[in-house]
Figure 1 (spheres, helix red, strand yellow):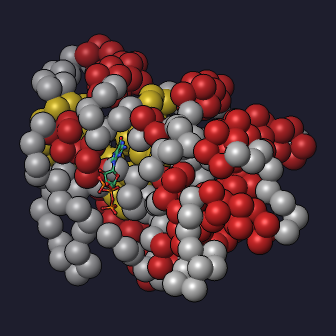
Figure 2 (cartoon, rainbow, N blue to C red):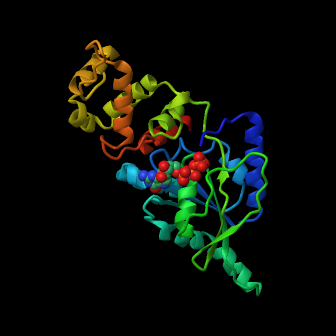
Length: 291
Ligand SMILES: Nc1nc2c(ncn2[C@@H]2O[C@H](COP(=O)(O)OP(=O)(O)OP(=O)(O)O)[C@@H](O)[C@H]2O)c(=O)[nH]1
């Protein structure tokens, strides 16, 4: 689903999430395991405020496993529990319920001491578009009930989905906007397919992808394209890949648009393996320079 994020829509999305937040004990913040920073809503801390939160790194099947492990540790160091899952195949779902119970254990203990009857934990999922919110809801509910997206102007009664005995999940996820201000974040969202191609230039995405690979995954690039770096003259690199993969136009010349598409498709379809585009060590370095 494509959403145009105009200021009015952002304000409405935020209001809706804040209304839903009143109903729940914990927020499941869904992020893309390939982009644990770039796929987060820029205002998320403010929106969620002090509500307990579990970070869920979804699509872990497509991310670099070593990076994902480091990201889970990174968030733990910042005081957030994070789990990595694959909603598509339903892998790691038990870690979600287990972590939610652990996060809320002190509160439940306090309730028990006050003589209150134990009840199910109420949760909701929040995340940017395309991060897998509906897929996860369906997986947790074990049947197809989540609607994709919400319709403007239609107020829908909230429904609770039972997840085992101990968790109740709101059937409508909170959809918040991605980061826009940073061009690199935009390219990262585009290369993973989180942003629709129509709003981004395919050549820019391909060039970004190749440069990223040459820095972080040169061996994978070598295996696929027989090169480990991107030439100063981009035409040279595109010619090389075009010839290698026989991407010719009707006149026998290299078709650069198609070469760009091929590179992006190769990356998205994992022909270069599992890739992460937010790199923990880079982030830690940035943070240490800012200090
Ligand atoms: N490989 C993989 N694909 C996934 C996973 N989770 C979701 N997907 C795919 O990601 C795409 C988006 O999933 P949705 O569940 O529609 O995402 P959403 O966050 O509900 O999207 P919006 O309705 O746009 O807000 C779909 O093609 C899913 O099949 C996962 O863990 N692994």
